[in-house]
Structures are given as structure tokens and as C-alpha cells.
Image (cartoon, rainbow, N blue to C red; front, side):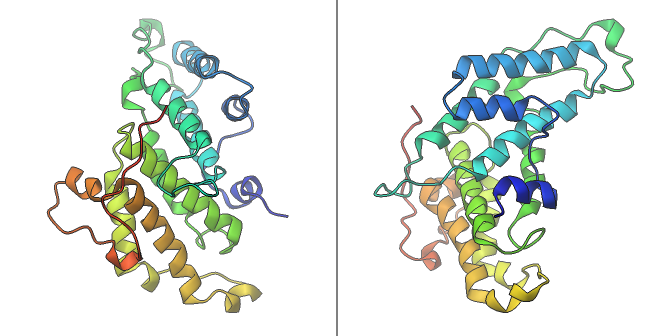
Length: 260
């Protein structure tokens, strides 16, 4: 039986490397076997070692942190039974708290002059406040949309909607500024996505009709609409009316509580 982990490995999705420590750290943290402060301490310790050591590619390690967080978000259900869909789950909040706490870490001291000529590590400074390479890694993960690299399976589509819910949450809480992604997801679901879906090969193609495919992208768009509502358009400085009426019974004014 395929899992999101096997799909990520088999199809080259954005995910953490088993050869680096971040997947293990985040897994322990999400399983409540590691406190937030200790998880952040371990992650920062690894990054500082790479940063000051000069023998490894710091950007590669930073991407792996974000890849691990992104892939973890795919595995977190976007809602709990009998709760409103705009209320984040405890695990979503826990993962968002990890990202926020990393963002609040003090920057390391400037790199020693002796390491400035490192042929491996091209990065000369590190600002946690900028979450360096996080946004770029998110955009890379957007290429893993359902149907593009793997079959259009239920587990794949559920992971995609979970990922969208996490992006909307961390955008709503201003941990990152990914409002443009939300706008694109909404517009494409309503205007063009169903006209340009990637094709899939195999015997199951006949079972995947246009309505099923469209429903997945509409669901992802609805998540952004429910979590952010009209605030999404206000942040983008757009005066257009929130275009989610076509998504069904979605209230553009809905908002979510602050994470604990």
C-alpha cells in the first residue's frame, strides 16, 4: 500500500532526506517525544555546525529543513471530525509553532574570515527571520500537485489539500507571506485549472473523470477561502470581490483563532 512517504520517494516530491537529521527531529517533535525548545535547539545546532564548519552546503541543509516541514504538513489531516473546517488542528498548530520559533531564533555571529573562501558553502550570512529558502522550497513543492508526478490517487490528493491548509494557516498567522499562492490557487481552480490538468498514463485513466480532478483543486481553493477569506485579497491590495462564491457555501469573512 502506497503512503505519502513512498510516493514522495518514488516520484521525487519535496521531502526531507533520510541522510540528514531533520526528518528524525521533526518526527519526534510531532509525536510529542521532543519538546519545541529541544527540537529547535537540535535543528539550530546542526545548522550552526554547517554554517561555521564551511565543509558542507548550508543551502542544502536549509532546504532539507523546509522540505521536512512541508512533507510533514501533507501528512497532517486538515480538520478533525465535528469541528469547523477553519479551525486548525493541534498538529497543524504544532508544526506552525516549529516554523515560527525557528523564525525567531537569533542570527549566528558572522562567519569567520577563514571560511569565506569555502568552495562548498556559498552562503555568507544567515538570518532566521527571513526563513531563507523556505519560499523557494514551497514553490518547488507546488510542482508535486496531484496528477503531475504520481497517479491521481486519494492519498495523494488528501496530502495536497493538507499541504494547502498548512500554507494558508502560516500565511494567515503572518509567519510567511504566501498570499500570492492563495490567490493563484483560487483563480486557477475557478478559471483555468480544469482546462489544463496534466495527463496521467495507465489503466486507471478512465476512472478519473474531469469532475473528480476539478473537485480536488476546488477543495484546495476552498481551504484558502475558508481560512483567509477576504483578508487574502486585502493583503494583496486588490479591490476585486472575493471570487469564492463559485466554490459553494464558503464564507469569505471566516477567520481562524490565533495559534496557542
